[in-house]
Image 1 (cartoon, one colour):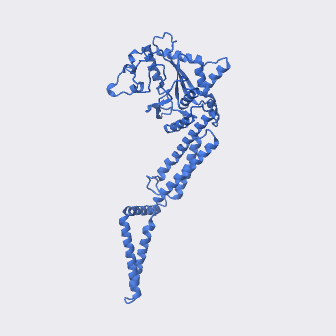
Image 2: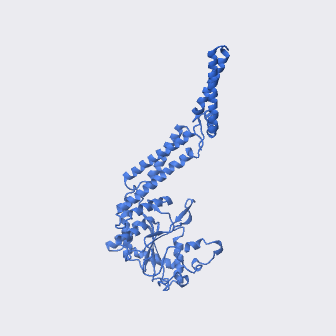
Image 3: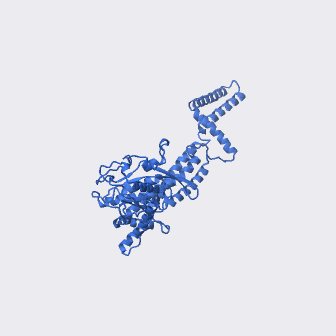
Length: 460
């Protein structure tokens, strides 16, 4: 509802807060219902992204696609511990901004659930050559404390409420004397680049009843104000960052490869994957993305040089020189990205890039050969030469031989018939292959220009 009201139609724009412009929360987004029975199962992603524009420090503007994901509640009475851990793990691996919904307080078991991924984080960092000092695998985790009962008397001062929750988080993750408690906190701080906390007061007794259908008027005003502040905080451009894996922003296409790899890893749900399995899944997806980006580097430039839309012919040596230069650039791009996981898997992926590039080059060579100005010349050139020689020999025979010589007359008639047949053949070919003949003349002209310019060819 909040995102919908950010960009309302012109006829319904209003200066009122979004929650005062709607009568009911409705149920056309992520499904919800009152009661104690669970509603959401598994992981759901909203079908349409929300786009946010931001300006980078260097002045460059970019658009970020925000994908909203909802997952089922943790550790209910119907879901096994391993499946719950898998859902938690999947959402953590895919999120750049994760919201951990807890009730009333941040309990120690909440922290232990987050610490579950510390082993993966260490292995992921150890697999990267020369990792950045202090690098952390996950980006932002925010505790959303529902039904927070400990706000001081701030009289609706939202800034003070936010400050109070930040101080509360500092106390929760502060150093502990007990070794196991301290290790849990160290693991969490080593996994996430940023931790935050926000509290929501109780929404009102009418809201918690099973028959509640979304009526906004029965929700406590203070809860709505806090909810509005939280939404502004989550979707503020300064708090939204692209998903990063190994310090590199992930594109939409790359995210698809990671989702597929992680989904296969968690597919059974019967057993939580070992850290090595998660590492392998991430590395496999990373190699797949590196292959696609490397091929993109090669094909983007080759399409401009000798692709299907090009019209100029390039000398084979020049085309091959361009090919080898682009191979170096493509493999360099691959090496920048594929630096994570098994060396053998990386080398196999690198070989795949080489083989794919060679296949692509054969196609570009074929296209370029088809644009050769002299290609197909034999089809027309040889008959023309034969007809010309026959014409010359007939003329010589008629001018030098006696009119009474039977041999000369038969020879002259033979040459006349020969070039006549050739000319008829050329007429038939010209009529049936008019386009090819037109292309031939264009090629001949291009060939003459090629010779006249000393072999210099302008590339498309």
